[in-house]
Every structure is written in C-alpha cells, then in structure tokens.
Image 1 (cartoon, rainbow, N blue to C red):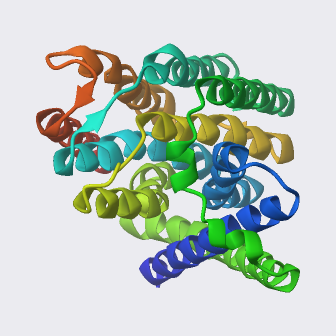
Image 2: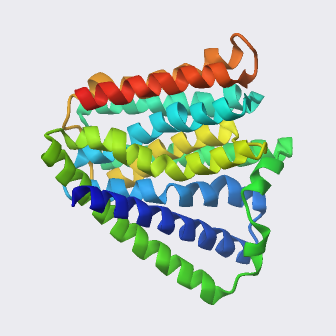
Length: 317
C-alpha cells in the first residue's frame, strides 16, 4: 500500500505541477509580464511547487528529515541524474554565466545551508526569511543580467505563446486542479514514504534522498531526455543550477518560515550534504577539463556513476 501511495502521490504532483505552471504563465501574460521575466521567475517558482508542498507537508507532520532529504536529494539528482543522463545523450555547452554567476550563487547557498544546519541543527524562521531575501536578490540580478545580455532565446523556448489567449475561467480551473492535486499528492507521498520507511526498516531520510528526490526530478529528466533525443537545445546548465538555487532558497526558506526544519538524522550532516556539495563543486573542473566549456558523454557517464554510488550508499546506511 505504501508503494501505491508513493506512486499516486508522485503522479498527482506531476499533474498538479503541470497545471500550476500553465496557469501561472497564462496569468502572467494577462498582467502583461514579459516572456523573459515569466521564464526566469514564474516558471521557476511553479516548477518548484511539488518539492515545496512535500517539504511543507512533511515539516508540519514532524518529519523534518523528509523536508531536508527532499531538497538535498533533489539537488543531487538534478546534477547526478538529470544533467548526467542528458550529457550522455547530447553534450552540454557551458556559457560564461554558469561559472561567473549561477554556479557561485548555488555554491554560496549550498555552503550556507551546511553552516546553518551544522551550527544550530535547525533552519529557523529568521533563517528562512534570510534565504528568501537571497532569492529575491538573485532574481533581481538574474533579470538585469538577462536584459543586458539580451539572452531571451532559451527563456522563450520554455514559455508557450498560446497561453497568452487562455480565458480567465480556464486559468481558474487550472489553478484549482493544480492546487488540489498538489495538496493530495504531497499528502499521499509523505504518508507513503513514512509507511515504506517503517516497513523496510530504514529512516525517512533514506526514502527522501532516494525515492522522493528521484520522483520529483522525473519531469525535468523526461523533458531533458526528449529534447536531447530531438537534438534540440536539451538543457541550459544555468537553468539547472537555477533549479538547485530555488530548491534551497524558496523551498527550504518558505517551509522554515511556516515550520522550522530540524535535523533529526546525523547522516544529513555527515553524508548527504557533502554529496550535494561535491556534485556542485565538481562541475567547475568538469567545465574546463579536459575539453573546455562542454560536458560531454564521458563526463556524463562519470556523473551518473557517482550518483549510482550515492544511491547505493544511502540505501545501505
């Protein structure tokens, strides 16, 4: 029954996330927000909704390790699974924004998260506010940089023009469907994860950093693989790093404001977060060695293999 709950929960989160993204973009068009701003802000927030709902639900029920494991595991999966598999299918080009802006911000937040958890063992409400403030500053700088560089092509591809003509009634229905499915999806997923952990005799943290994290990364993985197979621009490395930034700053920030997040499993600080920092840090040498400004198939295989090691060790812990 626990596996059924997890499967249904993930399915509802995928459906709810899709409806919320479409409704958010359509609503943004009605307020005459530019496509660039929609792509950089609205879409990013909406695609983080499944992780956010799961983290809030888990924290409210007292399962802080699921909240932390969900974010840390998703950040690891975004690089180890999504980036790795996509690079194997189609090499990824690296632009200057990656190592001059997006990567440093991701590392700052990742290291900051480590020290927040290490020093107090909890993400307090004030620290949650601090994470959101950093996110606002990041978005402000991101939009300004995009405007100056006139980089709109990649953003435009993620925003569907047809959503500009959607009626207000349809937007309302989409928002309702998105909200309801996300709510019940998060309920089922958290309940199923806790039940499965008890059945398997492992901690909620193990289920969170493996099964839940992979599940919430499936939409990004599917979209990236499809684009890579079609020989399209499969994935912007900057956008992927942006997703990790949103996970820490918005998901953990908002969750902590609603309900402080406590560290319950020591493995979060002795293992998981170091894997997250390691996957983030390794991107810089991979970006320049041996072939500069590209993450190709060999590097992709190495990244996926490392992710396999992480999953194996997590399940054995």
